[in-house]
Length: 328
Image: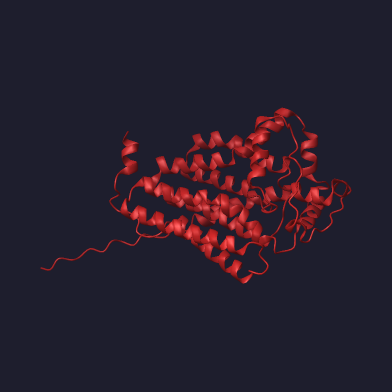
C-alpha cells in the first residue's frame, strides 16, 4: 500500500528538464534525422523515417508536460517506459540506414573460419541437437526482454534514486549499438548462410553479397527442437521484428552484460544469481540459433562491459534551486 502511495505522491523536488534517457534519445534522433535528410535519395523510406522521429519528439514533449503537471514517480515511470518501448521501432529502423552501405558478412564469416577453423554458428546445433538443450537455449534467448524489465523494475521499486541513471546506461548502450549497426552492416549467419548457400559455407567459400539484402530478407529457420514452446517463441519474435541488420556486435549479449554489471554494482546478488543462468543461456543461444557469429558474441561481451563502465561516469548534475535572499 505504501508503494502505491509513493507512486502518486507529488515529488518535493521534481526534475525540471529532460531525463538522461530522453537526452540520449534526442541525440540519436537528431543524428539519424540528419543522416536521413542528407541521404534522402538513397534511403528507401525517408518520409516514414522522418515521421517516426517527429512522433517520438512530440511524445517526449507531451510526457514531459504531463510530468510537470503531475510530478510523481508514476509519471516518471511512464516517461522512461515510453522511451524503452520505442526501441521496438528504433531497431528495425537501423536497417533502413545500414542498407545504404555494402554488406560485410563475407568478411566476418572469413574471420570466423580463420580464428576457429570452422563456422561455430553452423556446427553448434549440429553437435548438440538435444531437444532439452535446444529448449534451454531458446528459453535464454526469449528471456532477453524479461531480463531488461526485471532489472528496470528493480531499480524503480527499490533503488529509485538510481533509476534514471541505470535506465540511461541501458538505453545509451542500445543506441551506441544501433549506431554501430548502421555503419557496420552485418546481417548474421541466419541471413548470410541462406543467401550464400550452405554448400558454399561448408566449403569455406564466402561470397560478398554487396546490396543483396536491400531486396531479399529470406533467412534460415532456427535450428533446434522445432516442436518446442520456446523455439516457437523465438521464431515468432523473428517473424515480428527481425531484419537483416544488427549482427555485430551482439546487442543481446552486450545489453544483458550491462544488466549483469548493474546488479553487481547495486550489490543485488540475489537477483543476479536468478538471472545469471538465463544470461549464460542467452549468450550461447545467439550462436546456437544462428543469429550471430561467435565473434559477435565475444565482442558483445567486451563492448557491453566497456559501455557500462564508461557510461557509469556520465552524470548530469541537477541545478540547485535558486532561493530569494531576504532583505534585512
